[in-house]
Structure formats: C-alpha cells, structure tokens
Image (cartoon, rainbow, N blue to C red):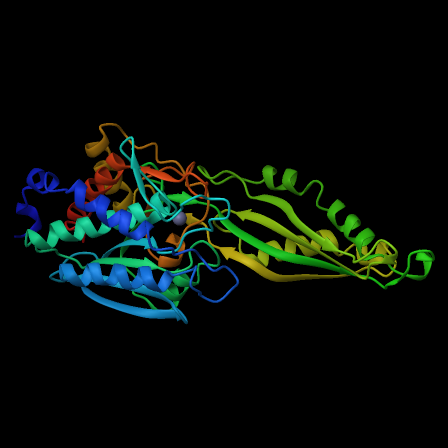
Length: 399
Ligand SMILES: [Zn+2]
C-alpha cells in the first residue's frame, strides 16, 4: 500500500496497548544499567537488552544488524526498506539506564494507576517499546515506505555517549531522526551541550609546620576558582540562543590533599560548562586559559594544567522550519489536541551525534527520569506510537 493511500485512522486504532506494556515490562526486567567507568558486568546488561531488542525486531521482519561499540556493549539497528524515493528516518533510543542505588525493586515492573513503574520505564524503554509498535503496524499493514525507516537501540547514552558517537563515525546517518527521550511527548528541537573537564594545580609538598618551604596546590586552586567569579556574568552578557538561553559554568568536584599536616602538592577541580551551538571545546578551553594565565605571572610558583575532558556532548539546534520539526509538531497537535510548545530539552541527548535534523519527543517526564520512583503514563506511550506513526508517514512525502 503506498503511503498516500494508507487509512491513517484505521492504523491508529491498531495501536495495541497490551502488547506495548508487555514489551515495556520485559525490557524493565532486564537490568541494563550503564556500567559507567567499569566494564560490562552481570549487573549492567546492555548486551542482554540489545539481544532482546534485536530479537523483537527480527521477529517482526525488520532487517537487523549490530556493531559492538566496546566489548559487550553493541548498537542495534533494524531497518524497514523504502522504495528509495523518500528520506531515511531514524527512531533512536538508548538501551542503558542510570544506576539503582537506593531503589527498591527497580527491575520488577509494577502497573498501578495506569502507569508502568520501574528503572528505565520513562528513560527510555517506553520510547523503545513505542518504536517497535510503529514498526509492527507498518509491516503488518504492508505499507510501502518511500524512504527507509531505521530503528536504533544505542549503548551508553547515560555516560559518554560512545554508542551514538560510534554512529557518528560509522553510520548509518539518516536524513532525519526522532529521539524518544522523555519530553511528555512535547517536540524539542534544541538543547545545550555539556563539556566537563579537569583543571589541576601543582605545588610542592612539605610538613605543614613549615608551610613557607612548600607550595600549596589547594591555595593556588582557591585563587584559580576566584578568576571564574564573574564568568557566568560574562556568559550572560553574550547573545543567547533564542530558546536555550546562555552558556553556563559551574565548578562541581574538587579533590586535593591527603592529611592536614602536609602542604598539598596537587589539587584537581572538575568543572561543568553548558554550551550553546557555536561554542566549541577549543573555544571554551581558550576562555579558561585566558582567565587563568595571568596567575602564572602574579602568583609565585603557580602551575596549572587544563584537561582531560571528562564529558563532551554537543548542542542540538534543528531549525524550526525543518520538516521533522514541522511534521512531528503537527503529529503532536493531531494526537494530543493542542500545539506543542517547541521548548528546548533540559539536558543532553544522542541527537547531535546522529548528524541530521532531529527532534527529541517521547513518553514520560524528565521529572521522573533518574529518580528512585521512575514511571511512565501508559496513555503517553500509546500516544507516542501515534505521534511517531503520523510523523513517519507524513515524512514520506518529503523529498
Ligand atoms: Zn535518557
């Protein structure tokens, strides 16, 4: 059936809430906690959920493939081939979740008050479940797509985003993408980037009873922090991004010294910088250097080092007039009955690494993501399927 002839209303009525909820529960029950700086292990089973997700796509008849990003942590792809006359659209979601310290029964999904509870329910296994339902409806109705529909299950969004960075390097690069992070279905076309790095000061250790013989790295770090006192004021004085606002700076972690009776020879600060489109890592490092460098002449024995970078995620800025923004906003309006606010997303996502115009749109609220009582409203998951389906079908006309 060509996409222009599909009976949209009949397709939307096929959205099967029961099977989406079953799928979501099965995925919550697989602990796919991000191992963060550790190797994959039995508590962090991204491989298991990747296998599961791929098998569900195989079962429906998608052409699936996988690539290991690192050992035991693959990206999974499923493709429904189009006839080559329309754009390739990717529905993308991450397979990992944040940790569960303090969370009672995180992997025992509970249904209550028309919600599904459990770790990963909204962030973002609900989005992944919705993608599968979109594929099921397209395949089982023999809808002939103009462009390929790609579903991507991505590793490691919650830490360094090595999964989507691998896609950035090795493809597949779609023409448009929808990332199903929790936005309560609102369409978000922009977000800030994040750049975290260490800044270190070095001194000379000695007994603290004769501190004048040493160089105190902590005291030097205090002076260094001081030079950033008005940095946020400077950032706020620059032209803002129209929706995301200004870049921001925050010192977040400090380490230094062993015992009080020694003058410390080392101190390390970890700083967080939220960037807007147009601010590169090199730009930011130059700004830091410009502020710190005068200390090397005004403070005796002042030695510092910038780096390494610990987190680096890009900003997203898809133009409002991009077809993926317009069509997903229209799909939101038709499904929810009101206009999307088109606000920026709070936080970073895989979207900029997909190297195409992309929006963030998914079931669940960022308020529940990463909490110890995570849930998603079931009605939002079924509405997500309708929004994705409407968007994918409308995008078939885009050339
Ligand atoms: Zn997420």
